[in-house]
Image (cartoon, rainbow, N blue to C red; front, side, top):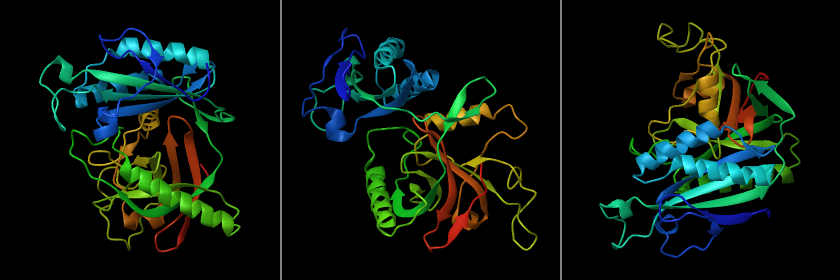
Length: 314
């Protein structure tokens, strides 16, 4: 299978075989972002976390009112993974072209019909260091790098859309552009520590995720001089992992859910908790994560003020 090859896959009853991808300018994903995507790592011909990606197909199709044969589609993806052997699969699902003009879609089976597009990329996934889970699976752990708070913000969304990996990603596009500029400036300045990711706020001011990843963090226990209700359940506990809510913004990533599930039967399951400005100086451990790279530990976080918070190693 050639690298960086796009194919159109059968996603519903109107198509039975994969074909070379040709896209009409009327494609609703192109015109309106009417669809979603998921990115899957492949090692030894197997899709990593395939059960979680399958659940994404089901949940996103339901949320966007798309008709998908998720089991057949997953079988097709697994076949392409076997041919790829090592690398990445990117699946894009869009609503089929509609007979009505504008944003709307018909209240009929044709309105929920969809198209699926697959990109295969040969690449090496770094799995040198791994974190074992209780179910016997392993999460890759990347080399430590540094992070910074970005001035870009991501949108707050209605509950029906929050957490989805939809094709509407302009806020992440602009934030990633800001991160690229900061990385270039750090390189030009001869800064040794690699700037690996940027932390993003939503429009309500909560720090939610990275430009391409979710966030987990630990906090130091407050001192009595800090006016915080220490009796609040699960508020601040040494060694407790927290992750921000995806209820109004951000993408509920596959690896985020893998980690939440992996710690669910331990003494300290992950607590869903907002990350605010006043928390940042008290963060003691911090990592980003996504389905392709696994865990990306951070050594420090540069705040918008220019101050730097150093973290304990994970």
